[in-house]
Image (tube, rainbow, N blue to C red; front, side):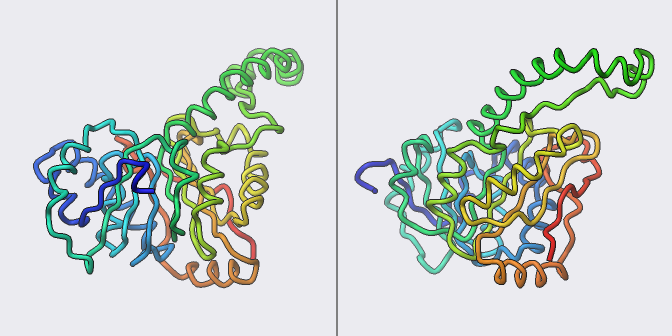
Length: 288
């Protein structure tokens, strides 16, 4: 794989030192500290191998590193990180410390070449996946509104329709998968048995309150790659900002994992990039 891709290997500590004076990075890292630490504590993400798609500089993933995880990032070079990494090529590596493998490439071109099996596939506002949902919702919402407006007016009346906001119809069709094929292909090819799937959607998530049927669609799509849905959370003030967690394994292993983590720190926050963090709602919880 190294002959075909631009790959950099560096100690995590040395990598994050590159941004020690970068104020936006430092601020972002601090803002996500509590949400990511809750994920780490609740789902026992310690001393694991984490694959993060669309990681950028890795301010969220920094906290995985601090919990002893090796990291693999795949991203285009939006922040011009490659020149910084090239300067470190000759630096001595301490292989006992957590390591970062940074692959500078479009994820579409990399997936067939990935060779390792990971404990966590982490997608945090992965742009191609967000765009996938955004395009479908824009197209479908207009179609749905046009065909159902008259029925809603008859049922609720114009005044009540305006006051209650019930004119805001669903935005997601029953026949579309909630996650892009790329996300599912990456997960299927790289996630090991006993591994976790975590996906946070920030700007183009499917509003769960308007689309409760999407929970069953998520369960179905994840099950096709051997993953059981554990949780879906969303912001009370904006249910399109949501967090999905799944576990790859047989039913008995999933039950045992869920039973064990149920005693751990609870999830009360996610999406640390929000200026005013919203109260979160649990849309789904795994049933024993």
